[in-house]
Length: 401
Image (tube, rainbow, N blue to C red; front, side, top):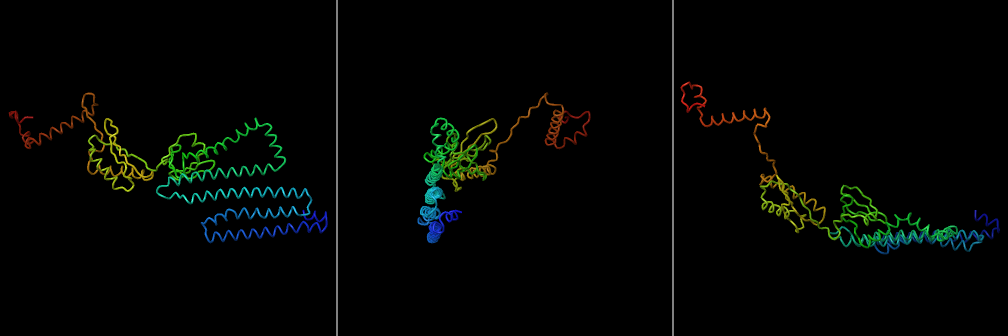
């Protein structure tokens, strides 16, 4: 339509003056795009993990869009189009170019984060330093990307005269606008500030073991707005960043992954504690999950029927500790069953016989007593029953029952 209007306004001369610059710009743009794609593929093919390949991958895609826009801007400026059309086209191309610059900066920040994460892997034995660096890199990267996008969009919008007038009006009434904007943006800026605090002070880091809302899990992801905690049963808990600043929580790997844990046993008062301690030491020494620091058996509580024995052990991390506690509990019960069954808890009761017992209970008790007496007499004098059948009125008192 633009070319048709140019033809109507100035004939074929104006059309040629407008079409040739645009055509040349499109050809150059296509050539530059092909060149950048070829360079990107070649760099990735020769050194997929090298610095040059990453740099080319970051720059190639935004540049393949920004450079054609630049060529089109130059072509439009040198065309024979009317001045208002040129101004509108230049404004649109400038907006697209500004967004390409924002896109390039966002990709560059992400590439820097990717390099830092690759150089500090988490799959090592002692990954405390790696988790600290990765947390800072991820949080600061997200915050930087969000900030760049907000600034870029704001600058793009300010190029419109109507938006500038609205901004001037808002600045004139800064009191009310500031209060309204502050209330509306409180969650966003609260999470941004919380993310900055977490990046600097690091109350949590990636792969930390935490207890949040009475749930055990690991920090799987930290974004600019929330934290993803992977629960032990594969659920995911999404927690706002600000929650970790305003609420207490447990971090089991804040300075080290080593932990202490206990297994409780309720045993009988006749439990031989020296044998229990010796067996606990044998169990710990034979288990590779024990880190060699703590192996203690103590009686921590007593009641009327049992004693509470705490078997305290240590491990390198929370996963090993849980498995070690279960193994200690199971093997100690097997040991007591096999060698000291008297140590297992049992119920004791004192049977009281008296007039307050029910009649049927007394009858059963008396019948049991008669049977016991008859058995005792039979065992004491094997011929007493036969003699009792022949006893007469003149039997001697010694043989009368």
